[in-house]
Image (cartoon, rainbow over all chains, first blue to last red):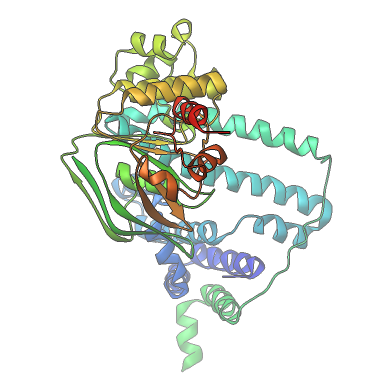
Amino acid sequence: MQDPRLRLLSVAALSLAAFLAVQGAVLAFAWWLLTRQGPVRIVRSKWPLVAFLPLALVTIVLFLTGTGWFSYSARLAVVFLIAVYAYQDQGPGEFLGVCTWLFGKKTGFEIGLAGELGLRSLRFLEEETERARQAFLLKGIPWGVKSIIPVSVNLLFGVLHRASDQADLLVARGFSRGGSSCVRFSPAGGDILLTIAAVAAAIAAFVPLGEFFILIQ
Amino acid sequence: MELILDRVCVKRGSTCIRLSGNFHPGVHLVNGSVGSGKSTLALVAAGLLTPSEGSVTRTGIGSAMLLFQFPEWHITGRTVEEEASSFFVPSKKVLVRAGLSGRCDDDPFTLSRGELKRLLLACVLERQDDLLVLDEPFGALDCRGKEWARREIGKRRREGIVILCTHEQHFLPPVDWIWEFSGHTLACRGRVPQALASWTNAPDVVRKLVEKGSPPRNVTPEDIREAACRTPA
């Protein structure tokens, strides 16, 4: 989606739909398939799928304790899938632009800047992890559980150094509080259709299935 | 021993970086402007990047090593000595070679970029890989460091294939072949010294010497000095 405002609205609506009911999760999953970019991006870069690990653990526990695991896991899996799509579809600076547009030049810019720095750190981690994997591969050291500790330590220090440098840079550029983001939003035709579909899915999630069939009759 | 790149294409956004050619044992100097595809060539040659088109064939190449442009990308050890050992080379010897013998227990991230580059260069040059790809090995080094690096690389000349991707124009080791990126397409200029005449990105002094009819035998500062001395004023 080109317009980050419509993406944010769609993602919020679909997350709500998926979280509220299984039929909402089914509709949100269908929407995700419809975007085409969702499946394509996840095939290109699979690492955001690590977000599903904690969910898998909770699902196992629910299954073993005999609690209704399917509804919870299916709904949460779709919420995660939509979140991964939002992360992968987002371009640099878009979150800052949307927050400033939504909440103004003071609070909005602050929230946007914090979010933007967080998102860039995630992308930084993604790239650094791939480079660490390449370094292990070149040296002929097996890439597995044993490499987690040295790689995590290096990544942690890398992110801390980067955060410190970014903070210095913001101060050096005269940043104290708030700011403006001059982003031009240009929604494409497909964006509007996808947003309508997402909002419709959210509304459908609120309507119990039984009542829906009564309405049809 | 040979590395063959056959009509390889690597997509970078809307750009396609085209790589074709045969790399034989010896030092191959690869030039090109920023973003032309030198680092992409390094990744493809080292087997870390699969091209979207074409094929890469390694004949008689048992092992390959790449020196990344940014030395911190290599770090996997917690100390300088551990980092050197991670390359499966005698760490003490390598640290002496890199001039870092007193820094064994230091965190590799506390080294300056130049020191780190020296350490990693010493590590990769100590190994006896059949294919060694050096991506900007002179980056972050001062003049002394560059002089040290070019001499160390020069020692590897007769041992396997060395691909040297660099912008460096002055501190160069003796090389056997010259390659250049014309746009985003890799082109072989031929063997040295014949290749010097068609080397587009040649240092000014080399170009002038070629124009005056007394080309240097190779691209090292010694060869260039010698050619300049025999050139009539």
